Image (cartoon, rainbow, N blue to C red; front, side, top):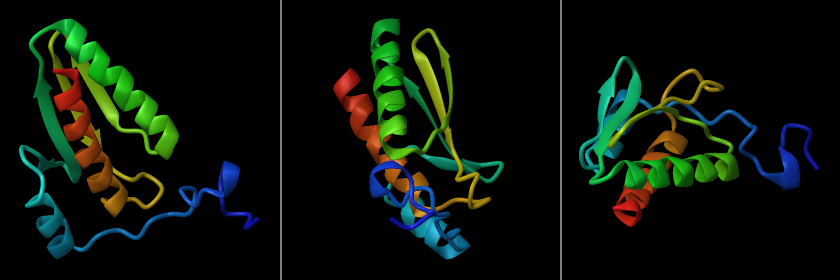
Length: 111
């Protein structure tokens, strides 16, 4: 196994390439409600109940562990804000946009 790989041979420990401004704009156009704020990919989610918000946070945390990609998450009652940025690459990568799409999917399941 390559030394740069993580447990189980995952390549998520290898830094992903930072996306160009054009690629960021293209990927951003495919996501509803996401925007760029302070070089981060950001979205705020609002849920009907605090229980739905907690369910979303827990599922997002499980996904983060599985993908070894951990967003900044802010939870207050029925609202959750997600901020994505690939620290290892020092910029936005495809991993951020893939995780954003996953969060959108998880939010639909939590509601």
